[in-house]
Amino acid sequence: MSSQPAVEVQDLRKEFIRRDGGGGVRHRRRRKRVAALHDVTFSLTRGECVAILGQNGSGKSTLVRLLSTLLQHDGGSAHVFGNDVFRRPRAVQRLVNRVSVEASFFKRMSPAENLSYSARFYGMTPRQSREAIPRILERVGFPPERRGEPMEDLSRGMQQKIALARALLVAPVLLLLDEPTTGLDPRSKLEVQGFIRSIREQHDATILLCTHDMAEAEALADRIGILHEGALICLDTADTLKRAYGAETVEAAFLAATGRQFEDEKEDE
Ligand SMILES: Nc1ncnc2c1ncn2[C@@H]1O[C@H](COP(=O)(O)OP(=O)(O)O)[C@@H](O)[C@H]1O
Ligand SMILES: [Mg+2]
Image 1 (spheres, rainbow, N blue to C red):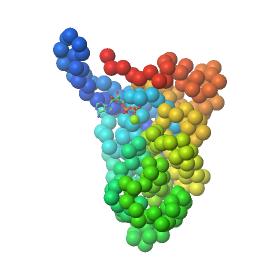
Image 2 (cartoon, rainbow, N blue to C red):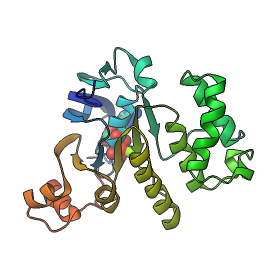
Image 3 (cartoon, protein in one colour):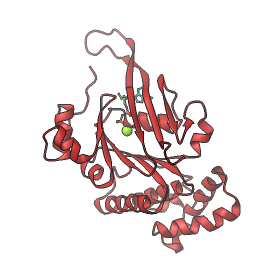
Image 4 (spheres, rainbow, N blue to C red):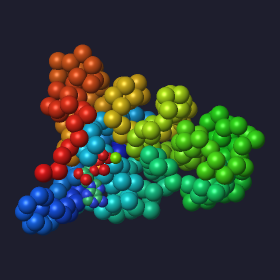
């Protein structure tokens, strides 16, 4: 059990159909299959935190959505704690928790109500959840007097913390964090990052962190992967990446690896 990887992805492939508008003078419309992910292979050991860096459109969310059973794949395989993601989605759903930019909650319901809904989904008894929920909310530093307020009245940073707290109802857990701090103000961002770090120390959690924030990747992750146009071009420690690309910083290594400016958005042609 302990030697079993938390995540094992082999030659994973996902294609989307893209309709070309034809653009400009020629009004020919074509439909072509575009690989959003091709032949992605990697594994995570239990307890590890791996960051995936990639510019917009590189396939980060596609990878996260495949691993959380929200998308069908077009080739290869993926296992989470030994469970085949595409053949046993139910088992995988109980082990995986996705925290994305837009955390999904019942917005009119309180944090405590949202957590108890999830606890039921994860098969906790009412007694277990009565005990676990206040403990988790306390650990997130959530003010007790606000537990009954609707989610929609809370700040984005606070909502993100509740999203992470929700992920901690079960163990072991694979946390799939899809740009968890994008759009947060600097203070909330640091708080959420601090919380992610404390989760690692206190909980049986394995983390896949997709981000385009290099400092965040370096601060939180054991290894950093670079996803470029759907291909995972490397996955190693920050120091090894820097050495491999003769770079002083992770950012410089990223630029060398992808051969383009990070701010450049991928243009459809
Ligand atoms: N549902 C979809 N239909 C068609 N194309 C999609 C869909 N989702 C993603 N894509 C395409 O797949 C590629 C990867 O997207 P995504 O995984 O969202 O990247 P990232 O999260 O790194 O920004 C992009 O080219 C995007 O346009
Ligand atoms: Mg994305």
